Image (cartoon, rainbow, N blue to C red):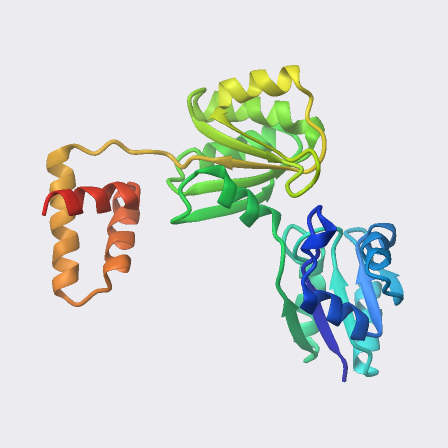
Amino acid sequence: MGKLYICATPIGNLEDASIRLLKTLRQVDIIACEDTRQTLKLLNRYKIKKQLISYHEHSKPEKEDYIIELLREGKDIALVSDAGMPAISDPGERLVKKTITAGVKLEVIPGPSALISALAVSGMDTTAFVFEGFLPPRSAKRRERLEILKEETRTIILYEAPHRLLACLKDIQEIMGEERKLAIARELTKVYEEVKRDSVSELYEYFNHNPPRGEISIIIQGRTIEVEARTLAEIAQEVEELLEQGIDKKEAFKTKAREYGIKKSMLYNYFVQSK
């Protein structure tokens, strides 16, 4: 029985390939890739020659069955996407599920991730966040999803295609308010990397005059709920009670911040200053 290796690949800069990734790509029998032309760029950079088979969002279930059969025959296979971690906003999710059901061993080779990289450089709250991937391309469905997300207090991460960015920003502006803070990360790790941080209205104007290109991540500030000082004091007291019960300090702040829909950092700062 072979093994399926879920391999994260560089999201732009080929020098982000890890030693473990390169070792894995050299030792497997076959590489299943989203676009063989894209994967060849990485393989040629590091002088790796392997049998490639295509596996992408339009692949039929028969292709997944074929890959599983190869694994059962003892072939080791590396699963890669064009960039980042397979199975995250990627058809690899289906293959992973089928592989688990088939009883085949899996191993993850961690590495670059556009959503985590974008969040880290955004300047937004990283205490808690939600990843939504690509919103529906049609405005009506996209707006339905945004109506739900506008109440979200956690930081929101989206992916978007450059030709839909302005339409998406317009919907965010109308539903979440023109002052909602955003960060837009474009072409991360590449030559023309760009990160813009501003209100959604200002970012709309910027990209309206500077048409975007390349891979885009949108990071949206979670809904901020203003809390009166007296109420904040009461919440801080509830944190104190949890601590007295032996609850971990970090977990106590996280629990109460989520319960009342406020930023954990705001509650923590008040707690410290009130001592």
